Length: 433
Length: 51
Image (tube, rainbow over all chains, first blue to last red; front, side):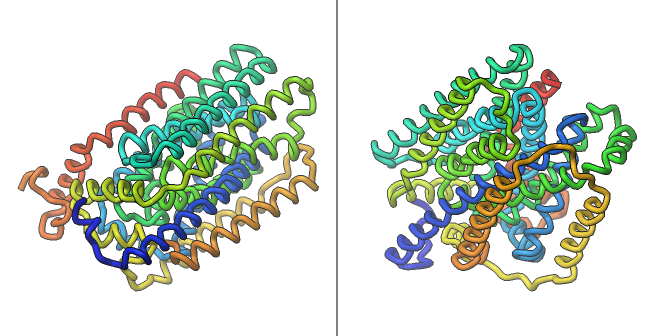
């Protein structure tokens, strides 16, 4: 092992206990991420009727952009973000590429939801977990030295997820015309491939010591840039994009809110990837499939006109996928596997010449530096984002759609409980590091 | 100083251009980087088809 593995920042016993605690924290973050990533599709569902998928995706990304700057400013401050980036400046490029992948994938999911419905499209693009596992094993030494039991859990879980996905795809094909179903399935699987590949930059960033809140701030520049290009290109230019944005004033708030809710889930997902790796963090956060199924079926009543056999297929497929995720998640990394992560981090350190102390402190969930906080800048960012949301809220109309309100309140309550538990644990254990 | 000669842990003493070039060159030499780039191009082609 190299320079990084030799850093004597803590004693071996203390470090092992700390890593175990951080892994439990990563699991909690993954579960909370699932709930909030699943809920993010709900506001978008409220307005999916007569709007272009590109406009929907663009407005969501504007909400994401606001969320990805104001939440990190609130939690850590822009000074710490700047200090992080100065330690590993190459990650700005990686973050921007990851943001571009996110935007294209998100636009594909809007097409998939339109063609297949929320409850079917969700599990299909959640194949991103399989892609993430593949890249995690190939590039970052995940699951190396993991032993037969852990490999079986991960591969068996992956097989269950694949079979569950196939069942759901078949259900969709029986409910929708084949041409539309094919297009929707291809869009959803394509989104899965893009999102699964997006985890390469994620893992690289966290092995290099980057703080998740700093990474997402640059990630979102790629998101907004790519989405602006896509929306202008496909809607017929920037003037036409602006005209459509203005015409959609009554629904802007819902789409911005969808983006903001997504950011909450995504930040937890980033911490899950940081502390339990791609091969476990992503399947855990992909429990958003179950939340998507719950929201679609219980709150929106999507299954109302389906025959009993189709509903059974959707439920069985989702259960199989959930079992697969549970199997993967239960195989927590031991010391031997963790050493391989350190070796992967060591390679990043050598490749890019990063300060090894920066990487070590990040892997242990502690702060490497505390830059003096520029409170006026943090307050300004949060103020602008809040004003923007309030302004669009005053012009929003409630969509003509019936919801099952008791179910909505119950799902919201569970989401808020998970949010509080994960945020408080992150603060207590790592101060959001 | 060429981009290849710029080490990322020693960027404080070089010009802004050399600094940016050095970072870009280091990323471009990393083979992992080209996987997301290729997938991104594929995603853009797919988006054109589904739209």
